[in-house]
Length: 444
Image 1 (tube, helix red, strand yellow):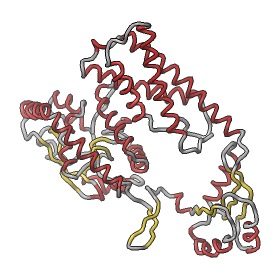
Image 2 (image 1 turned 135 degrees about the vertical axis):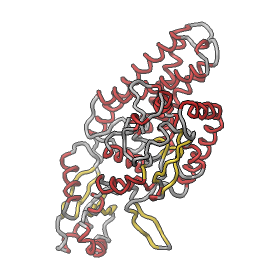
Image 3 (image 1 turned 45 degrees about the horizontal axis):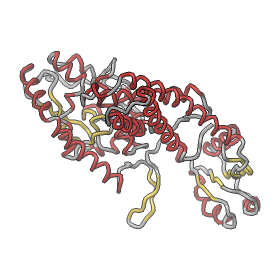
Image 4 (image 1 turned 90 degrees about the horizontal axis):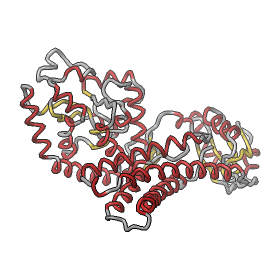
């Protein structure tokens, strides 16, 4: 079953964070029993773990129409492992290992994982039972025929325990008396599923339903197409329907710009010694310039010069541009290491400060391949609805370099459709720890 209450995922995440919190302190008391807790570092890392978990666990526990305990175990196990790895890295980088008990860490990991799994399974089973025995289903009428109408009818009839009940079905709207009869029925919602070809009937249809107290919703078959951030906006006093639109406008655009500017500036300042070392190393290990400027395509299809530390011979493209196989083009073992650790991408934070890129977004492609990919890959051009990114949703899922472009586009479109500040922070965090994970494949 699908949990329709929009608050459920947030409640689920808060419960998970609470379990991590109390497991940490329970482990403290098990480890030290009646002794005084040695220092405040324990409190800092417990609170830090709760924050990290809240940032990365953005998906709801249930992703389909049926619940499986394996799904809950996989979900919380993955998020808790990532959280604890992040905390472990912080312990290493802050040299706090001598302040913390390793027995406590082991107890914390075990207790939190056990209670996360048990509580998630129990919570989802309880929610399933509550919805299964719910008697407050909304009565709906479906007007129209076509792809969308068939999908709605199938979902309502074949999916048990959802919150809707089909009370009336009118595939054809020729009979005026039939429609006027709907107004006298006790309905919660009326779904109009007319094809676009019959959109001219909509004004008369709404007029005939003017006496109904039910909520009326229109679902044209237009939405069976792949639309990005569709909705409505007002332009020059005229209401328009967005078919494909960027998620970044108004407050969202302001948040995104502040995020890019602040984080990029901090990274460039904090990593300036590393940048200097890398620049010197590039110069010493191969002939040519330190930076490699490559024309890529960004927001709204506009080209820009993307900066990278040069990891390939200066004349590598003298015989023309070739897509992929970047690992074979590296100039030196140091270059391969630099690429594997994603360090060659660091100068792109300058592109971000210049407004040409974002920290998180679809990776930009070479100008030479855009036309070809746009013809061959459905919805490819829609990635340019947002600024290109240094890292992205596709990259943290291993889709780099010579990987399937169709899959990469699906991940890019998912990011554009589901953008949030927490999703950006999750991607940045995952990118930071990715080079330290085994089987890393960091080609671009």
